[in-house]
Structures are given as structure tokens and as C-alpha cells.
Length: 492
Ligand code: ATP
Ligand code: MG
Image 1 (cartoon, rainbow, N blue to C red):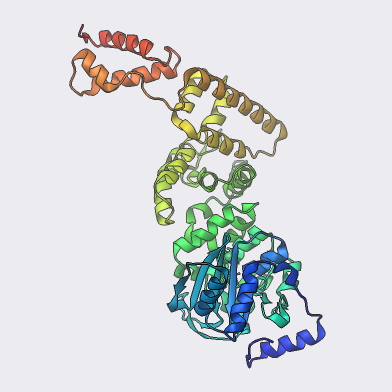
Image 2: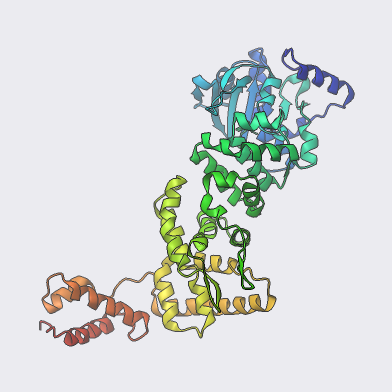
């Protein structure tokens, strides 16, 4: 029995269950927690269902540690009694929202009273009142996220699926339970979620929905940038991020929060010279890199590596299109982009900035004879991020010319070997000057002045250029030579 809801969906449901065989998933609900909910609900004369992402992922055989329970009774009361039965001590209650949750055996179990929502145009926070199960299913974003399984004794494991989520799941379709225009306009975050699920689950967004997203894209302005970025980051961590990034572009959601990335799009042609489309190139780089990393910030390095190309683009006669300095301009933009998108501004941002600044260097190395000194300098500047930088550069090779790719990759391997060889020998990856500024000052009886800096720099350059070894003795002797050239006399 579904709670007594006097609306057409209730009747639809009854009709459907008369004709369709009842699907039962009780064998998938073996966890102790479900039986505990069942008992607690029985004691409280309430009905309870597991609903949403957990049910979807169960059908998709995906791991999901979040269990959402919806009840006809009181969410917090049901949470408290269930926790008691399971011996869980800590329950967090959010009385204002009528929700409560606790952690049990690594799963987060959330309880909510079934509700009905109504929205105002200016906020994605709805007015909420008590509702039936179907009301609660109706307020959900997609039919595949609106399926529920009964936890009542007489119907334990029965699927309650008034919007045919199971069929959509089989067809890999994202469809909204209500009119898409209403669903998206009510809570525009759902548009980002649609794209995220499409990328994460490899599902298609239903045509009508896609059109509604395009129409409502500007509504994203009432969503906080933090929430938008949670979805964007999940898109980057999908198996093939380009699916989501392309959808963001096509629906113009991307235009609402990331105009710099939109500007990468397009090809200009002049005197038979055309440059590549930097938007699709960037997508390819992100996909390539995703195949080799789970590191979100490394993926951000790929998103931003060419971000300043449109800004630095020039046409030079006889040469074609150039993008001189795009790596430096891009690196300078990273802090302001991170700030605007409310991404972390400490070491993650610095890491991305470094990747953008250095992304051309390994490939530039492969173009000439590979000199030890250039490789040492790269090691010095990249430090411990050298391996990530190399992964980004490898992903950046997207030429369609097979022999070119082969040559790049072969040279790239040579640079990699050289990096290992030189690091073993010279240890410049975490370079610490073997002679300190204090020692320079003490040796030549100097106050802090520009000569001290020059001497320190000259020693560093001599090491990176391989003129002297990276040790105290050679560096000290070299310092004395430098001092002589500057007419400085060492104290004896
Ligand atoms: P994941 O946990 O992988 O992000 P999920 O579908 O479980 O995916 P949650 O954010 O955990 O997503 O939300 C749980 C359920 O709550 C969803 O399955 C959906 O039914 C509902 N839901 C979440 N956010 C919204 C929203 N903005 N609009 C409507 N329903 C939502
Ligand atoms: Mg979830």
C-alpha cells in the first residue's frame, strides 16, 4: 500500500500494478539497516521506502554508500528509533528540514519525511509541506532518481516506480518526472545535474529536456557557484569528461559561469591558414589525461592549459597563426578564475598555475637536441610536480598526423629518461642552494645587497648548466671566483 494520496499519480500507480507484474528486489535489501528501518516504521505506524540514488545505483550495479529513506511519518523520529535498534549512538537532526542522518557501517543513512515542494522564481529553496510518497517522487530531478523500494513487511522490496524510471534506466535516458521546463526553472541546479549524470552514467538527456535546459540556462544565476562547481568537478572526474563538457557548451550552461572556456571554441581561417579548434582540443586533452589520472587538479591543468590562446592569437604573414606567451598569460589568469569559481586558492591553485606556465616546456625540449641544462632547468622549476606535468604534456599530443605523434612520443620518452638520469645525478628536483645567502655575506663581509643575490643566482645557474656539481665544495670554490670578479675579498 502506498500512503493515501488522492491524486492522479496514485491511481496511475494502482492501474499500473494491476497490469504489470510487481517487481521485487528484496534480495538486494539484505543489509541490517533496512530490516531495522522496517521494524522502527512498524512501531511508529509509518511507512518507509528507500529512494533515489541508492535504488538507481542498485539497478545499475554501481557502488553507493548513501542510503536515503523517505517516510510517511516523522523523519527524525524514524532515524532515532532505527539508530537505537542498530546501536548507533550519534544521530544528526535537522529539525528545520525534517531530516536526520547517521553513519552505519560506512554508509550514510538519511531520513526525510515525504514532502511536496513549491518554488518561487528567485530562489532554489522551495516552500515545503508534508506530502505523499508520490509527491516526494514527483519533486525529484529524474525518473531514474525517483524510484523507491518498499520497506514494509508485506511488500518488502517492491518497486514503486510511478514515472517508469526503470524503463528509462534500461534505455539510458534522463527524463524529468514533471514538465522539464518546470523542473529546471524551479531548481536550475538540476540542469548541471542532468549533464553530470549524462557524463557519469553515459546516459542521454531526453530531447525535450535538452531544449528546456537550453531555454533555462540563464537561470543558473540563482545557483551558488560552489554548487555549480561541485557538479563541474564531478563531470571532470567522469570516465569521459568531454561528454559533459560538450553538453555544457551545447546547452550554453558553460557560458553562464566559464566564458573563458567558451572563447576557446571556433576556427579562424586566413590565407589558407586555419588554426585548430582549441575548445575541442582541450576536451581531447582532458579525456586523454583522465585515462591516466584521478587527480582533479591535474585535470584542471588540462582545462586551463590553453585558456589564453584566444587572447594571444595573432596572424603573422608567412607563418600563420601564433599564440606567443599564452602559457604565461594563462598562468596569470589562473588565480582570478579560481577566485571567481570559488575553487581553493592555496596549493591546488598554485599547482594548476605551475602546470599552465610550464605545459610547453617538455615538448619544446623534444624539438631540439635535448640538452642536459634545459632538462635540469625544467626539473628545477617543476620540482615534485614534474611527473604530473609530463602526464599533461603527453595528453596534449592530439595531432591527427600519425608519424608526428610517433615522433613526439618517442622524443617524450627520451626526455623522461633524461629526467630520471639527471635527477639521480644532480638532485635538482628539490633544489636547495648548497651555499646560503648568509654564507655569502659572511665570507665577503657584506650587508644584504644586490651582489649577494647575484652571486647566489650565478651559483644556481652554474649548477643547472652543469658547470659545477651540486655540492658545497664546488659551490664554495665557485663563489670565491665570483667574488674575485666583483673585486670582493674573502675574509681569511
Ligand atoms: P550522487 O550521490 O552520485 O551524487 P544522487 O542521485 O544520490 O547521486 P544526491 O545529491 O545524493 O544524488 O541526492 C539523492 C537523491 O535526491 C537523488 O537521487 C534525487 O532523487 C534527489 N535529489 C537530489 N538533488 C536534487 C535536486 N536538486 N532536485 C531534485 N531532486 C534531487
Ligand atoms: Mg547520493
